[in-house]
Length: 438
Image 1 (cartoon, one colour):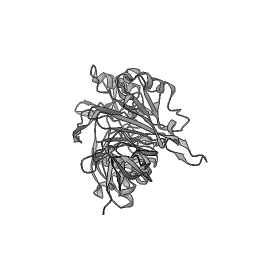
Image 2 (spheres, rainbow, N blue to C red; image 1 turned 90 degrees about the vertical axis):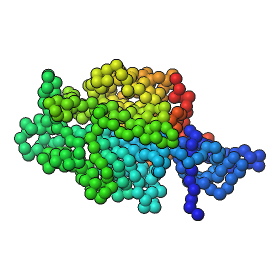
Image 3 (spheres, one colour; image 1 turned 180 degrees about the vertical axis):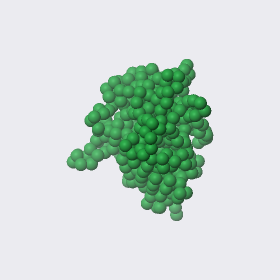
Image 4 (cartoon, one colour; image 1 turned 120 degrees about the vertical axis):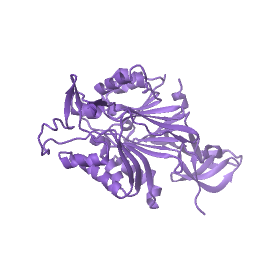
């Protein structure tokens, strides 16, 4: 008989070692978050079901488990970078989404050794519906190369912001054609714009043939070409503020992805990006900005936005405010490169900062943490940090990664991080619905 699995449908569910003769649970040994799968064991006791989950057997309230998972977001600790996995619904009527991949194999190992270990162990394919590359900086996309190359994965669409990076020392054609590390920039009505970009895979390959592309970006392109040739990748597309991604109804609630940036221009019939100060500000500032909504709740992913980029976005959207959300991923790893006007528009209940131990960056910065707490709709704002949540084992030889977990059923939100030491039968430091109400 095939194993039967159900998911936790309440915000979280406590699991107990035993059920007493009085029918009441005894000795809590675990707490499981919404959307987590549990294996159903044969034993039942009135309102209690015995299950196996996370290497433990125990008893769970039957009313807490069902068949319809909701939205889960895993802000994976990838060190100095960004990497997030979203799952909405189940395999038959749901989505798996990756937003950035970090600078290393942390995300890849998390997926293969933990989240999708069952698939890997049983040689089953994992379908990723969307991969978003916010921009082509190493700390956001290098970790995607192993995932795209891995034949365990099939991929629907890889979305990107369309800006390539070049090494001017490698360029073997007249330098005037590419007058920056991002290709060609030009002046229009007193402002500088970037012209060189790509949308399709053919255009990406053409840029490589022309020469000068960064080695890492060529390696990424090789992985994309490989997945396409193997029939594991359907689409590869550039997106900006004019792009539309179809709304999907999951568990009777709308799941929507709005592309708020980059905000591009049409100049003399050609696509152009506003040039911000220098190459670094330009590629960071034109990060893909996503507002994701599920039911009545919303979440923002803003890549590495900076001061000129946020001013550019606010000018474009003028008196409207599409940026306000319930939970925001902090832009640029908690750097000081932000505007208080933009943070005031975002106005979340909770902020997640993804950063590493690179001392030259000193992320997250004190003013970023302070303003994340100040510009919020909550009386008790939450500021999570993958770096601050990280710890090591007692022997100081094994890092315990600082992943931040989010669960949402379309109305209610819970967020959690692992405790450094387990107490009261739970590994989780939980923040429940009361933190997400006005």
